[in-house]
Length: 223
View (cartoon, rainbow, N blue to C red):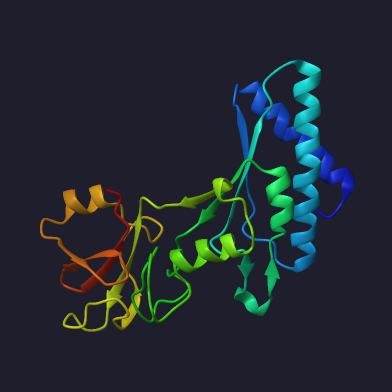
């Protein structure tokens, strides 16, 4: 869609129509994730054309301008899949009202050999953490008032190899129970009577649940 002018125009027109139809005051774009730097460049073109379109629509209809936002990677540099690409921060600053940096899903079903943090704030052994990602956006010169830290309301589970080894990074043999690998805290509280919470130095709470098979549950909790 983003690679051609006509397809971008059709997409933009559709988003405005849907937003107005349902009396929304904003449109949020969630592209996970642009796969190449060319995709990133096209993403920037899409944002610029989107901004022009919503400005023109507001002037023509005399309605308040629609707000524009986008969900992004936690870091302005996307480096997985062995392909380096970077968001065009200048385009984001000019075209969006804010971004929701997805500061979560750092570990999950794509690596079931060990438990991991879903949304660690700090970790001295890794840069796949929220503090590093947000600081990277700031160093890339995003307007700080447009930078929003995305949070989670779910956790992920692993089946532990050894119930006596139960911390972050503990060996695991696969995914634990849960709905599409996500175990919501209320469900766990009602179905499992004994849950012991733990805190680690990464500012990430996690839980240990001992069943017939040992289970490690990473849980992001909002206070």
